[in-house]
Image 1 (cartoon, helix red, strand yellow):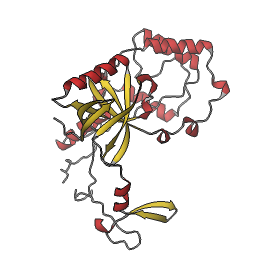
Image 2 (image 1 turned 180 degrees about the vertical axis):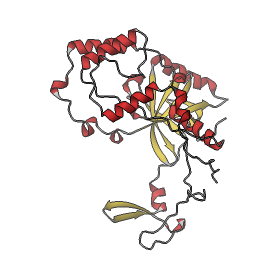
Image 3 (image 1 turned 90 degrees about the horizontal axis):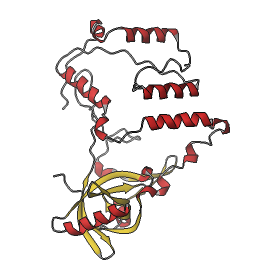
Image 4 (image 1 turned 45 degrees about the vertical axis):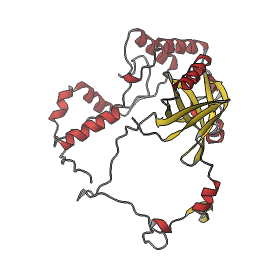
Amino acid sequence: MPTAIWTGTISFGLVTVPVRAVSATRSRDVRFNQLEETTGARIRYRKVSEQTGDEVPNEKIVKGYEVSPGQYVTVTDDEMRALAPKASRTIDIEDFVDLDRIDPIYFEQPYYLAPDPNSVRPYRLLVDAMTDLRKVAIGRIVLRSKERLVAIRPYEGLLCLETMRYEDEVVPVGDVIGPLEEDSEPAARELEMARQLVASLEADFEPTKYHDTYREEMLALIDKKAAGEEIVERPAAEEPGKVLDLMAALEASLARSKAGGGYADAAPARVRRAPAKKAATKKATASRAAPAKAASKKAPAKTTRAKKSA
């Protein structure tokens, strides 16, 4: 059973529901340590003063906020503790809102809310009511000494708590993307073809069909190197050319979709592409024409057995 990061109660009206929060996700990223190339020794980071170059112990380090270039205001731990929100074991529901009214951009980190074994009935009551009405509860929680805005929603018969971003933490679209050009509006025929293409690719979301292929390939590479196998670098994939004829691209894509073809291959011949450099074209053509086993005939790069990190 995962360790609970928070225990307390959900409160709405005069009803309280004891729960405990456990993380609903886990990182599967491949993480590396930095090593010295010649010895394989771990590289460590030390906190060093820019002025003296000497290492500074933790007890001599204070927090500073930069108010202007090179100018800092220091804040003590006591001052930070005085401003910290009072620890609370209650999530007070402030509002119930429609699930469809919350854009996913506001969601941050999910946690499962497990019921107290002695209070399953009020927990089920809240789950069923919110499920029937398609409502999400909005409240606040003090998590790791910080008050967080949260959304609680039904998920597979249980409650899932999502920490949320505040409104001023979401960058307005207009700040990063200017208005679209007026002459970029698609023609009616293009829009109809795009709708047909989207409809032809419609499917139920099945999370198990999507895989982190980079992570899988990286772990396979590590296993081979740890076993002392020689690694042959595969040829680089051909860069897709720029589509110059939008209508031709839509027609070709729709035809391929109706025929049951995939989109991982090269672009359809009917789509006019920007010319590529001749050398790159010859290299890509040769790599496609050669069978997969031919790569193993190349002179393999010399590799060494991976050193076990400390």
